[in-house]
Image (cartoon, rainbow over all chains, first blue to last red; front, side, top):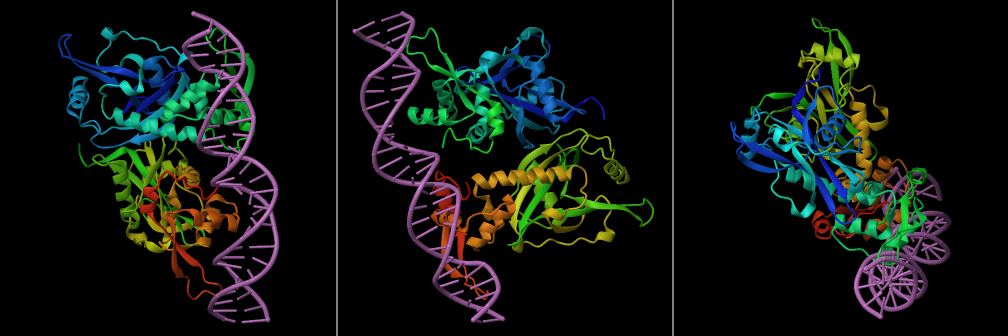
Length: 254
Length: 254
DNA sequence: ACAAAAGTGTTGTGTTTACACCCATGA
DNA sequence: TCATGGGTGTAAACACAACACTTTTGT
């Protein structure tokens, strides 16, 4: 087994981030230029992704590719689906692009979707140099608001939609919500996060009742400062306590 | 794109069946003979699986392969995980077998696991002719009790374990349990099925209370006949009603 | 008459929902 | 003193867990 790229298998990463206001997703730009000159033919958006190497696990590949394209390092990644439609790269734009970067547009490629959640404040994206990079390389990694995303490459709109659905189901049964929050967060922040993910509003009093009843959400003796209203108390998630009493079910929402 | 086999991508199917007593899984035998003669070198068990064709969706491939190997036709299949460890085919036995059937044992292969549930009584497996088939072809499809399974090919023990875990989680939130039952079933039959899948016993009265409260489980005016005890009432699952009121949550178990 | 499995209700406890007002801070 | 979001309690409805005896059938 060698370290070449496997031309049939790729990974794509859907990285969700939360800035204490809205849910965002990490995307790159895909550019296509005239073969000779600098003329831009089109630009659209793409998930960070690429082909795996033959000696790599899918997850290792996803970690590597994400790092290469965006500078994000060593973050929790989880595979959530595989996209295997034989026609998934057959839109005219995609065929044109594949041909332009020197690939055989007929090659069958399946992709594994990976998903991750990070608190925006904690990570910095590196910026690559748009103009010196070849067309096959994703440009300008950026966070995008979920509901204002333009045209996407390949079947990435579908991949994103599936990831969002996966996220919605996952937060109902596993404590992944905390991956999106800063270490210390207020009750309203976590409630707002649920609301933006699920797209519905929740009752404040009932939500807080449940929150404060969870033993693994520990209330700190620390409050917001410098806000123009009654300062809110901070909480944090204790994975220790959670692991110790996994049995207790995770129902912040019903 | 062509119809050749893709040497990097395979599918494996974990088909669970229930015979109103215990949970079973569908396996084939993998044989390895001396290159010349009829001498059997080893035999172990394998999930039904094979490589996909380049013009096939993963699910289409799984359907085709399952049919070719076992005769099962047009059954509900769902992808549940991908197995991509670069060393997944590197056990000595597997390397020997791959070489013997004329494959390059160094080729990287990832496999998509598919999973299905069927009521045993409704399906017949075709029997293939062990002795006239080449070694690369799975032999003698059979239902095996889950807790008496011998040595398995490749990483199939892991695949099976993952499928079982997936099933345990899935029955808690989706009405897939009914896929394992005959159209008409009794309360004890469905309770026993939960018990064998989850590996724990449930309270009869509480279970039946919940069962009869589900609007999409309709109670029939029909009873068992010829049993040496009080005959039990039959129920059936109405997908119609379920689809109409998806909102109501699916909790036969807590 | 016996064996075998079906069927059935109550009570205490915890969980969910719905709902409206006062509080602390900075500007 | 105003605007902003923080913070709190109760009652009614419902869901859950624990628990033991009677019924119907075939043999």
